[in-house]
Length: 336
Ligand SMILES: Cc1cc2nc3c(=O)[nH]c(=O)nc-3n(C[C@H](O)[C@H](O)[C@H](O)COP(=O)(O)OP(=O)(O)OC[C@H]3O[C@@H](n4cnc5c(N)ncnc54)[C@H](O)[C@@H]3O)c2cc1C
Image (tube, rainbow, N blue to C red; front, side):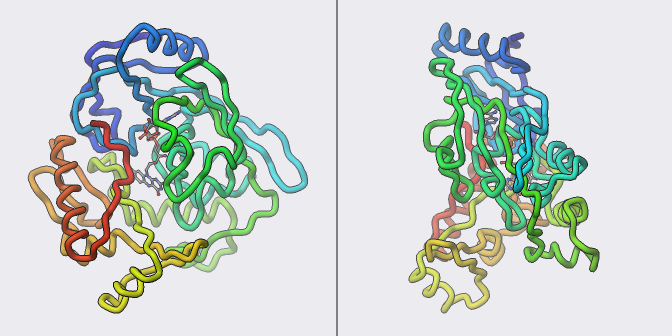
């Protein structure tokens, strides 16, 4: 494991924030993981596990070691009557993995096409889009405990997946390095196309995994700002989940407020709608702003710092709280 001192993180986070780290290393194999464990034991400094940097905001420079997970490899493991089991290493690019499953004739992950980042980060916030979450097709994962080197296996129940949440967030980030994830992909899939324009984007064609993936790629490219063009981390806030009483009260005042019934009886509403109707879509302060394309996405117009992006997020949280008495929660990890 080669360790680089005083490395720039600008190209390693999709916000394009110009932060740096005291130490930087890449984890390509088991020897590198062993070396990381040894480094950790010898240094009283934090380690941050980095995938594609698409769900992180560096508020400051990082005083520790950033370890970028580059573990590679993917394979079909086995098949039974109902599922094909496929596994991918933590450093594999998520979207390329999804397209690979489709090219092999496996279905299930198509609605999660074009989400940036790595396979290893995907379970952390139980990534989701267009009516599907990672948890829907998750089987198990392997992780190394960076406190003691133990190799652990987590099944679905142990991961405690919830909306943009999992056991890994609650247990403590950077304690478990996810080395590989296994999916159970249905051999008799039920297509999810009645969500946010997917059916229309299919233009009357019979659904299959590849067509749905292509339709979703098109929808996402149209809707979301491309981090290659303008720095961002996708949705910056989680959609708030409200009690039925709170929802009723708001709905009387704002009849257009969208709501999606949850299994537990609560109602998920749209953070983008709240921000938009607070007049903040397109709001800009220096190089930090709210995207003109999508009210839920904070953008870096060029040289915004992590502190400036955090400050604009605080302004939004305050405005939403004043107007609707709802407290928005950031979705990306803010590294302080
Ligand atoms: C344009 C855009 C669109 C997006 N759309 C969506 C969307 O539709 N749905 C959605 O859910 N998300 C979306 N995201 C957010 C993001 O893509 C996902 O959260 C993704 O899973 C993050 O992957 P990453 O590899 O970039 O993780 P990073 O940002 O590098 O890390 C995220 C967290 O995971 C931890 N981590 C990373 N790798 C590992 C590992 N191997 N082991 C243990 N911990 C690890 C990090 O420490 C950090 O806490 C979007 C982001 C962008 C920029």
